[in-house]
Amino acid sequence: MGEPIQLAADLGDVGSAGYLEIPIQGPAGANLLVCINGITLSGLEIDPSDDPTPIHFVVETQYKLRDDDLVIGQIAAFASIASFAADDSEELEVALNEVSAIRRTSNVVALIVNGELLGDTALFRIRYQINLTISRIH
Image 1 (cartoon, rainbow, N blue to C red):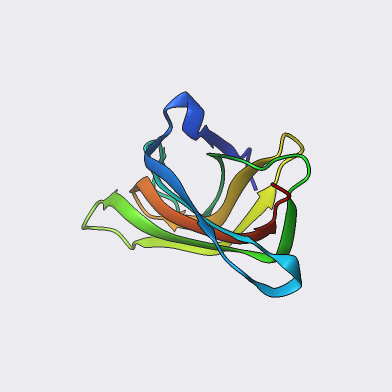
Image 2 (cartoon, one colour):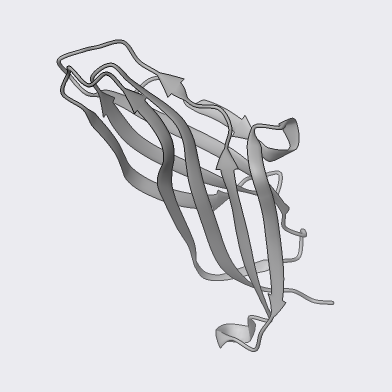
């Protein structure tokens, strides 16, 4: 797999970026549901090839956890293709095969997207949503 395409909301690489913090009474002391979403504004264009080209995006969201925030359970991440282009005369494949989210050492929540492109293809935008429950001491 090639070098990851690094995108960051605070650098203008993500449009419609936002988050919502919802107070909850959840399992294991969770007291906050956080929903993070956005649309990447940068993408990738590949040259025609007989083999799929692996893609790897790392998107730093605008949401930063506090040092004492405890993430409860798994972080749920969802992504879909929002915009792409392709040459009609060739075989086409645009796939997002694996989507996850992590807490970076900087405490920023980041989206990880792996997939592949085949054909004379360009992937312009990816739409994402990340949901996590945290225990926050007020």
